[in-house]
Amino acid sequence: MVRPRWVLALLAALAIAAAFAVLGQWQLSRAVESSRVETHPTETIVPLAEKAEPSKPIRQTSTGQMVSVTGRWVPGDEQIVGNRVNGEATGYWVVSHLAVDADGEPGLPVARGWAADEKTARAVAAGLADEGTEAVTVIGRLLPTEAPEAPDDGADPHSMTTVSTAALINLWADFDNRDVYTAYVVEIEPPTGLTPIDSPPPSQEVELNWLNVFYAVEWVVFAGFAIFLWYRLVRDAYEREQEEAADAAAQAPAETTSSAP
Image (cartoon, rainbow, N blue to C red):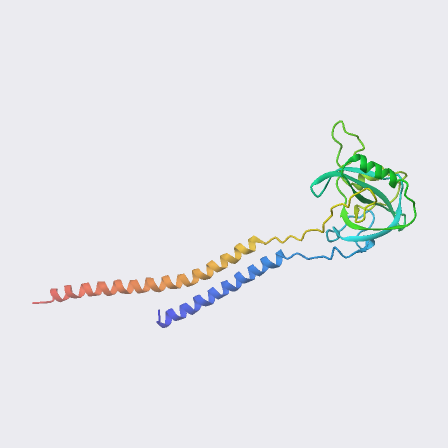
């Protein structure tokens, strides 16, 4: 092992192993970087205009953002949305139509609150139909519109289980040739008779890139294999020299015997 050529071979193996280790560290750092989640201050209240535009889908970074919006309620456009889970209970949402204070007064669905039974929800909705049309400011969490669902067989054809702007605009009175937000707002302060809707901040999940981790482990294995290969080469050379020495020692007595008179 201390012969010059094997020392040089060891240095070469160490250099190769170091290069593999660097590559493994790079792959591991890539796995960590790809798992980082860009956090957004969703709990900071910002104007709705900064996060959504009428007739345009909201960005993923805007989902769950707390927003404020000024407009006027459109009495009579309240809708009941069933099968809504609040905590561990299933009940009903009351969804109102807010004409946003902007060009053309685009429509924005606002989930006002939750009720455990349909009777309570409809009673509150009937009371909201008497709301005035003066300007109000709504604060709540911005969420993307949901896909419409057809009612079950035998159910009320006008019943809803999702907050779909595509379905709501067909139920809002005199809503023609006007823009609508492809999102809705969950109001944080419900009207009297309703329970606040459980709307937690969006979760920030971190998912590790296991493919990069696998590559990093591979490079570590390659680094160890470089050292092991050097060891095997040295051992094979040593064993070969030992065998050659043993063969030479075995042939020496035979030659001496054959040369005797």
